[in-house]
Image 1 (cartoon, rainbow, N blue to C red):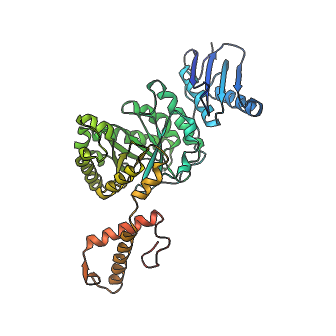
Image 2: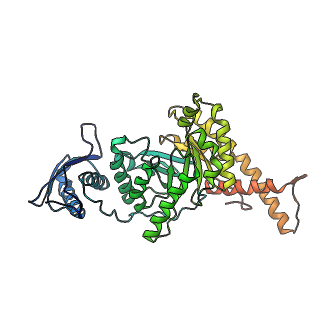
Image 3: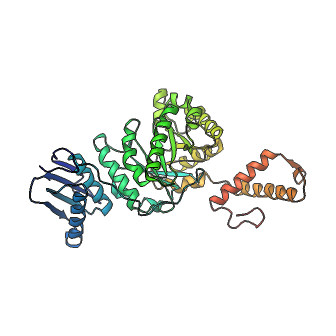
Length: 410
C-alpha cells in the first residue's frame, strides 16, 4: 500500500488553478499508486526552458512527503518556484500525506520593533501568487498576506501553503511581513502553518474578547519556544463589532505581543445596522474609543481601509482626519493608495518647523540648567515639549527631516 509518513492510504487530490486567464499559477492533480515510483507529467508554456526544473522540484517535494509511488499531472501557467511548492504541498496534504517541513525563510526579516512605522499596510489576497511576487515594490510599510475575506472557503487550506511559501521565498524589501489569519478557531490552523516561517505581525479578525488574543499569543509563544529563535511576532487585533469596541481596553492589554489595534468598518457598521459613509460620522465614536484604548495600553491605533480605490482625494481627506484623531496609519487595498496614505499621515512642514523650535528651546533650557522652557515670549508646558519630541522623532522615521537644520534635526 502506498503510504506517506505513517498516514493512512492516500487518495486522489487536486490543488491550484488553471484556465486561459490564469497567470503565475499552476494546477496539480495527484493520483496515488502502489508501484512504479514517482511519475511527473508537466504541461507548461515554458516547458522548453523550465520543464526539467519543474519536474525535479515536484519529484523532490513528493519524496519529502514520504510518498514513493504516484502520478502528478502539472498544468503550469508560469508559476514561480514558491507557487509550485505551495500547490504541490496542498495537493499532497489533501491526498492524505502528512505535511513536510517548510524550512527557514530565505530572506529572514530583521527584528521588528513593536512601535515601528505603520502608516500603510497593503492587503494581498492569500490565494493569488501573481499579486504576491512584486508586493514589496509598492513602498507600503507592511504587506498583509490575507487568509480571511479574500480567500474562498474551499481554498483556505491551499492558501495557507501559498502564504507560507511566499513568506519563506519572496523578498518583501523593507515592508513588514504580516498575515491576516481567519477568525478563530479556524485561525489557529493558519498559525500551525505560517508560524514556521515567522511573519512579523499577525492580524486577528473579528476580535471581541481578550481571551481570543491570549489564545493566539499562547500559540505563538509555544511555537517560538519550540523553534528556539528570538524573532518577535506582534499581534494586531481587528475590532469589527459593537462587542469588540466595548472590550477595546481589555483586548489592547491582553498580551505584550499586541502592537496595535485596528477597526474593520464594513463589519462594524453592518453590526450597527447603519450605512458606512464617506465622512465616517457613524463610526467616529468607535474609532475614538479605539484610539484611546490603544494609547492607554501603549500600542498603536491603526484605522480601517478606505474602500473606494478611485477616490484618492477622498482617501487623503479621510487619512488626514484619521491622523487628527490619533491614528498612526490605515489599511490599503490597492497600491495606488499607498503614497496618498503616506502623505496624509505626514506632518505638515509648518508643524515640523514649530516642533523643531520647541525642541531647540527645550535643549537650550536643559543645557543651561533651566527647568522652564520658553519660546519667544511664551512658556512651553511639558506636554507640549513631549508632543514636539514625538513629532520630530516620527518625522525623522518618515525621512522628512533630511534637509532640516542641524539643531534637533535628523
